[in-house]
Amino acid sequence: MFNKILIANRGEIALRVIRAAREMGIGSVAVHSTADSDAMHVRMADESVCIGPPSSQQSYLSIPSIVAACEITGAEAIHPGYGFLSENAGFVQILEDHGLTFIGPTAAHIRIMGDKITAKDTMKDLGVPCVPGSDGGVPTLEDAKRIGEEIGYPVIIKATAGGGGKGMKVAQTAADMERAFMTARAEGKSNFGNDEVYIEKYLTTPRHIEIQVFGDGKGRAVHLGERDCSLQRRHQKVFEEAPGPSITAEERARIGKVCADAMANINYIGAGTIEFLYENGEFYFIEMNTRLQVEHPVTEGIFGVDLVREQIRVAAGHDMSFTQEDLKINGHAIEVRINAEKLPTFSPCPGKITQYHAPGGLGVRMDSALYDGYSIPPYYDSLIGKLIVHGRDRPEALARLNRALGELIVDGVDTTIPLFHALLQEKDVLTGDYNIHWLEHWLETNLGNA
Ligand code: ADP
Image 1 (cartoon, protein in one colour):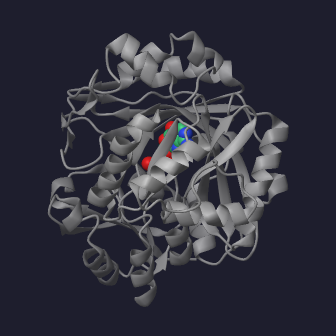
Image 2 (cartoon, protein in one colour):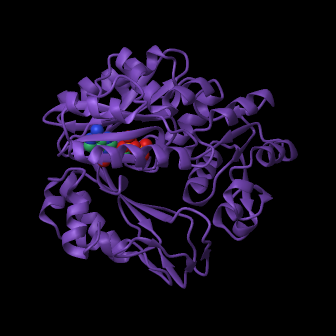
């Protein structure tokens, strides 16, 4: 096992990894920008290294600085968290060249899944059901129009390098195609340096269902059921739960096996998430994330396993500590994302926290790097905490979420907490009757915002 690992991230996810390392008796090294000198992850780690100025480009994304921090501290492995360098195949390659271990999948797997066209082709070959659409990239507007007619409108044009909801445009009719095609290409180019796009049938009322997978890199892989992340704004998740309210045990076992077999087939190592749209009882693959997801705690809640611990174990060459048979679902878990954002526009709201109080009690988990007097810097993501609750069933989890939200105090900045208070009054949320468009409609109707 490793003696010391470095966490190439910040915020709640850095704490999450430090906690797992500490329970395993592994030393932790935090890295931070000058804007994060007072951050909780720096305080909580065993050691810390300042790796650059506030801009992510020059700190959390600076590969030479991170490798140097490993060399200075003697860290043997790096956990990337999510975002930043977590899906950067070049980074993984450089670590290998320096004799450092990346706690995550291989560069080859990251590369395959990072390009959505290659990912879809690979999954199709592995027997995973996909959304009907173009066969690979669509080079010209004429091709796009022809394919639109073939698969039938509405369609969605997606940048193959896209992510975080960027580089995706819907064309409702043929008249929309030119605008959608050009915008998706331009967004792909400006955000990801790649203007290749492909086209998919746009599903009108699907749920977003994702399967958590885990492999040991030696041909064994398991699935840990699904998460329903349908409540989204601008393709960004805000409320996630497991198990999915609409998924039966048979469906879970069937799609779970397809995913686990696919991962075993490619010798996948570590945690991964295979994302699907789910409509009328069918699953359609959209993309795979080759990292730990923000919403992993709901899966940990219902299976009672520590996914970060498991990531560290397999990266160190150990076997997984569980088999598929060991994994039994217990109860229901829900996560809500607390962002420092001002409603109704969701504009980022950095600033000083004048009072912070985390909820507690049975079945409540608050993953956050906040503390009284902390100043949220303006340079990074607006996620400041995740409130995760677990109950014996969905109604109990919902009641617990309501209760815990009532205890949570974050003063000094605007947050998304009022959104969740309001959502918990909605019948559709209480019954689990929602799809990926539900929240945007609700925001439009209730906040005049989409
Ligand atoms: P990203 O990499 O930006 O997260 P994804 O491919 O995972 O993009 O899609 C994000 C979200 O966009 C999905 O959860 C869903 O809400 C919507 N979406 C993607 N593809 C489709 C589609 N074919 N039909 C309808 N909605 C889609």
